Image (cartoon, rainbow, N blue to C red; front, side):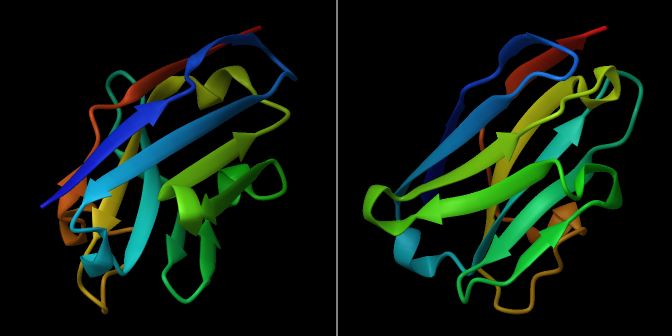
Length: 124
């Protein structure tokens, strides 16, 4: 089992920045990749960014150039640095982990573990 705990959400003005953190614990050796998803009210959960154990990165087109996913293996933590935030980035953000080597970044059913979510609100 893997436990994921997100932090770092909050309220920020458009153009501002936030950094989300996802701390993993438990059977972290089994993790082959992690992703950040978001879900806005009335919308489907969507991939924001993902990272594989080998270092490959993936971003949604809507956040390319503004968001950066990274990890600190010593701290078992994955980060999502969000810059130039827009009101349309407002959502609940979730951290997810996959233990399958062939997981697909944008297929949320491929992820085995999820955090509780952290809310991000961007005011205009």
